[in-house]
Length: 514
Figure 1: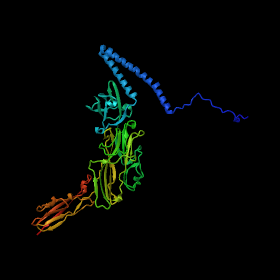
Figure 2: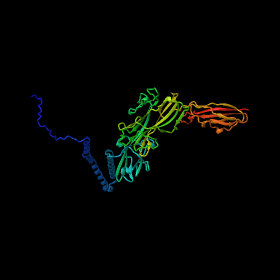
Figure 3: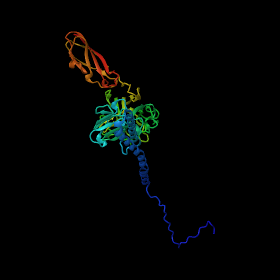
Figure 4: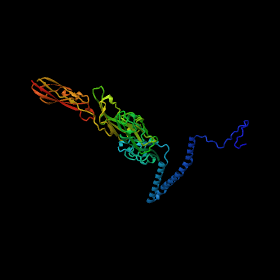
């Protein structure tokens, strides 16, 4: 038979049962095995190694202490005693190094906290109580033994040590790196027991781009109606570079340092859709961080079919909240990309056909806020940028642009035109003068803004002290020439960005003849 041929199967033969292997297949789940191996490593390797290192050192430490107490404090001369004290000092430093830097405490609190700004108002404080460390009553505090030092400002600050049940701490310096050794160590000691909490101190620097490609780490994109280049900051008018509307495309960047902070592990929660102003009333939790945008604007609109241009404006230093951070316009740091935050915006969504005339002068300021567990506080300087939009009769007219800094443009305005008149009246007549004023920009003219002042002729008593669109008076009983100046301000008088040309003047003459 061919050696490769198979023998026919005997259907009547009993079925062979495979022998049970002595090598049992491992049925434990991978996670269970890994936990078991980790436990075995800690029990059989790590603990003996640490014991091998630390126990002899501890015994040596105790031995030298005993010698110091029993022998040297009584009989040693000054030089030998100084030598022993230096040895003890170095042993203390060695144990400090081993305790804090090589062998971190399991379950210790290690958070990130803002600081390092030049202005103390931008460095929020943090409160520590002895109870936070499991102690009661007063403890000895120390805040300068880590890679970065903090400052105790209460009680009795500024200083780096204190004895009390509570301290208030500020962080004036940024941690050089995100490593544990460069964190601030907030230490509390009582009855020879020292516990610590760690703080990696960070800060952010804002900057703005109005004409440039978006940062390579920025995954946000502008809407397609702002232009075909959705990854570029620029100013587009309808029809320019594929834009179908006015769009002042802007990117704001917050650069964080130190680099590489694992934010989720350090207790920082970057919030989206945070509502409300910055007055501290907005809800939040300790470790929350949010990007804020506020606006200061001056706007004038005359809608089709309406007789007047209506103005609205904040004062020069008045700012209001400008919406919330959404996923489409805000990108916060992540553990994968921890070093930058971004916001984009493209204001200028104006329907030109809806208005007879329109102007918009806006300033935006961007900053970050932090919640310390009680309130929100600003943790960065402001970065400010502006946009100007102007149109008349459905056409864009200059200025139309945007850029960094405060808005340099005044609003569009022309002063009112006062048409002077001359009247001839008889002696003793009662005369009524009515203002004849026309505003080229269709701005409202308030009656209280009309001022009549007599500039020539025998004095007469003006009704309502010369205020209003109409003034009444009685002329003298003798021939005379009376002159009056009318001064009128339009509504732009109350707009902070007015060029100062809201006033118009005209002369009215009354000839008294028999």
